[in-house]
Length: 308
Image 1 (tube, helix red, strand yellow):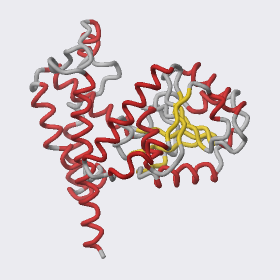
Image 2 (image 1 turned 60 degrees about the vertical axis):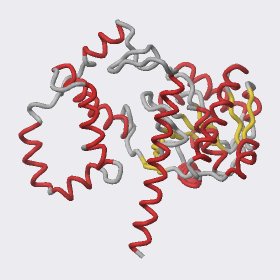
Image 3 (image 1 turned 180 degrees about the horizontal axis):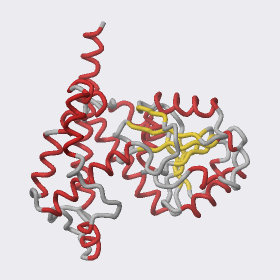
Image 4 (image 1 turned 180 degrees about the vertical axis):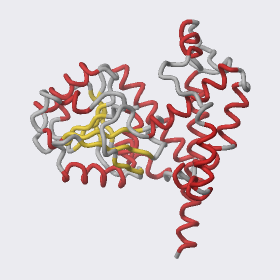
């Protein structure tokens, strides 16, 4: 995800330092940055004349010491608490007091990561991006008790200047907001697949052509308002008794992991993949998302003009 954040910030006009543990990892990240930027240019979201300026704003290093004067740092390392704690401790020691330290975690608690390892706790915040981070607009913001209003407001303004849509998560709950909503949908989808209610293809079609089609322009609460709260109450009162509500991971997933059917990266998951690399499949997905981003931006501009 790091390369996506670097590109997002560089497109926003900021100087960026991208760090990783090896030169090989940085070389891979650089190639991904260049490839993603070419996609933005191809879809008309960035002008060709800006290519070199954007790429020139990103530098690459394996040395954390080069981050000491940064205004804002966001980590997206392995999702394990000990490495994150060590990283925050190191950054807290080497960086200037004004540096804002952010974590991209969604499954770990920011209070647990930063407890007893950061002195400047007023400068700590959680900023959770969605993959691919350079395309998906959402950034979830969460502050701990010690996070200052100044830190929160600066972080919010920074991401919005970079073209992101920010929301405030007011309680530190596992999974934050968007991941919990996605997990709830996924639990039912996996259950429907396990029961043989429909094929993988038709379940996905149902999501894309039904709820997903509406969700690209309206949230569920607005959809409920427009459909009528009384109608939703009646439907939910009946359906809830049949909806999957288990607290264990669906056994279909466990079986697939055991059989090494891990999706596109192993050649088979719910679908079979052959003849293309994982990067190729990801590229195709990202291109579709970019086209959707272009459409939604144009749609919002049209709606704004109509309101005026």
